[in-house]
Amino acid sequence: MRPKTTHTSRPRIAVVGAGFAGLTAARELGRQFSVTVLDRSPWFEWLPNIHELLSGVKRSGDLRLPHRALVARSGHRFVQSTVTAIDAGAGRLVTSGGRSIGFDACIVAVGGVHDTFGVPGADRHAMSFKCVDDCDAIGRRLAQLAARPGRLSVVIVGVIYGTLGLLVQKAAIGHLVGLAFNVAASTFAPIFLMGVWWRGMTEKGALWGMVVGLLSSCYMIFFVSTLPVWMQWRIPGLVTVPLAFLTVYIVSKIDGQVPADVNAFMRQIHSPDVPKA
Image (tube, rainbow, N blue to C red; front, side):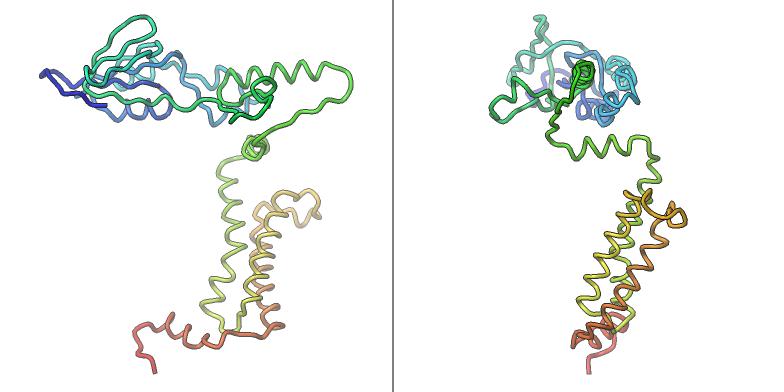
């Protein structure tokens, strides 16, 4: 929203919402602007780690930083209030407390809201997982259920990201990145290298090499405790990459259906400037 500027002072920028987007916008706006950031909450919440509240790794205070201090670092002003009206033409917004704030440009970055998409019973029974307060409420509810005798059932919707986050929360990020490269190398390195340097690779050999590389690397990562001690390697690619290479070679030899244009392909790859015969 950008009304016509009618003054010669610093341009006034209003940023409604102080989440990731709002704070990033405020930080990128230099001191040549007069920036006012508005949000109803005094806290900025680091949402990527809210799952750690349920696991007990972190407390609410660990994931909250004061909006006022964060905004002040960029030399701007923070107003804790809810914006109830924005008049783009007049260049003015109104807060829940009746305060009127003028602007030359307004950035609206209020984020999303919890939505059950009309699923019957979801509003009544489901608990959202979107902020620190939500996780605190879920934690209290789980503690109440745990105190009851007998077996209870808990249903989690959208389980993949949350569950993976809980599983790897104590793992070193560098190690996780290394494991991802292990999976990628085990799956694709054999077919890339052998496809360029070996004329005998077949389609079935390449396919089986990818499958074996992917499955073996995943197994050695997620089910390492089921393997013999001598196979519990921190870098599974030392085993799975050679295994994938061997699979490509053996299956290709058994299959024997090498593409008819393999020689032309090899010439094009290794000698692209040589004219075709």
